[in-house]
Length: 460
Image (cartoon, rainbow, N blue to C red; front, side):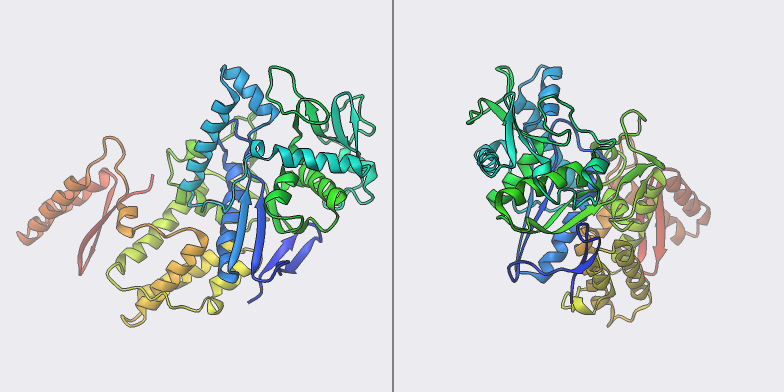
């Protein structure tokens, strides 16, 4: 089955074919580690983790690199503000980023290069651009000359003047053109820096990804991903650096996820709707956040709200209830993915909403299926969940959850269920109803069936 992906560079869906048969290289821009990751940062992580899972069903070798930017002006400012060392800040937030993304069921990338461990590669790239006439020195800086590249702006499909209008570019008198961007900048004695042919300094942000991609993945990679906000200037500048230094295509398929709004408004600190993943994890499990992020196709804007999260929670509860009902049935995982509608949906440019709808359809079939058909249906649901990074937890544990502080314990719930059962046997139906209501008030729902009584905690 072919995999089709929307290529930002061409502006259309294309059949994906790796440069090297059966081997895929993918790079996604990672965090600048000076603060906690917000939910907008999490969308590309979940999107490209899903693509990573899908690619592994097609190809024997998939190398997925996601960098860590651990040297940047924002990091330096955060360290000064907190009276801390740079390393202390970056280590703390790198660790917290990894923890938070793991809570979203994101698999670790194959490679996670740190900017500070690739300075030599960045210096070498800068030297090559100078040598080839695409860069120049000015007042201790080395800058890329955007006018030296004939098709600069091809990715964002705008002229240089159009791209600069309203863009956040540093205006400096040492630039030959306002759009020229920094490859290497001088560092003061108080700031972190490295020796270079142009004096002690540190790399520009755009330079870092280009250098790390060539160092770890090669001169041309298959897929480069990130949010739409990175198309210009970051990814445009990556293309400029890499193609002018080494030639070739640099990236064959560019993929960008759309923006995420909070309650219908663009997320921003000034609006006070800046939600970190860690804050949200205090109220919702990571799988709920992941499911919510997958509820829209990645190129579509997503309105992130409490209603969306509550809906995601309810949907997952329903699917886990279905799996709990067949928990004692052996699973048949010998399925042919190419025959599965959910697999077709994911291969159509990661159409996750359709894939989720197909899981619902399978769950309905499972409810009505004969005993002989249930193992295969259960296996198909779990296979779909595995590709989406959901439904991988024990169903009973998911539904019963972890008791919040002060909530009734599992042992007390089981004791009351036993009391209710005894009341029914004694035909004391009033007491049985009282127990049900007592548990409901405490957020516990009872579900009676021929096999006995199951329980789950209500979603908040």
